[in-house]
Image 1 (cartoon, protein in one colour):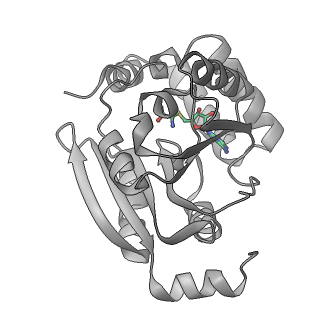
Image 2 (cartoon, rainbow, N blue to C red; image 1 turned 135 degrees about the vertical axis):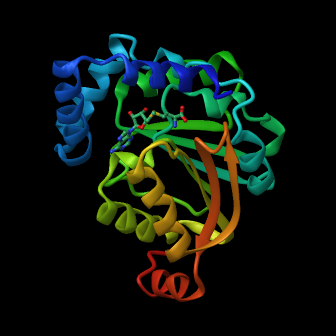
Length: 230
Ligand SMILES: C[S@@+](CC[C@H](N)C(=O)[O-])C[C@H]1O[C@@H](n2cnc3c(N)ncnc32)[C@H](O)[C@@H]1O
């Protein structure tokens, strides 16, 4: 069975009436194509009214062991980190430093307080920013997108992954957890498989969720290095 928060989102989708469905489509367009300020306000509004409370706890999430194995006690960048479950539920001994980025101030505030409550302020740091404009200050062992990659158009996803490739350590990996219920989500996974070297691919919840671990191909890595900042 999918975890509780998946069931909440799935059942919500099934029970929408016509007007709500139209509103949902508009919401999806704003999440993808809105300006940074519009997206920020939209996500703040949704977090404030409790729509995403289901993300507060994700104990035993299927992605944790994959992040822990690939972090190799090193560094993690969590893009679209939400209210801080990943940064506090991962085994603290599995990583040295964790940076969470989210467009939503409300989520970032929650994540910061949660890290404080869990005694992780020495390891965890959180930044309010759009994934599109965030500029990392270091390279990472793991760059993770936890159900945050499908808030961008296909072309944007390619640009994002190419740009963040520069911030992976030599043996670093991207890890994407995404649901695959819709064709567009499956297309994202297929495109990743075509364009990157896939290290692992794990289906969960009767294949409704996939965790895919991948890294840039040799040529992409060289391309990224040429325009490198460091
Ligand atoms: C479905 S939630 C997933 C949260 C968390 N990664 C998890 O696995 O529980 C998607 C998150 O992505 C964030 N997000 C969406 N678009 C973003 C963007 N353009 N830049 C940064 N964060 C974004 C949202 O604010 C939200 O917290």
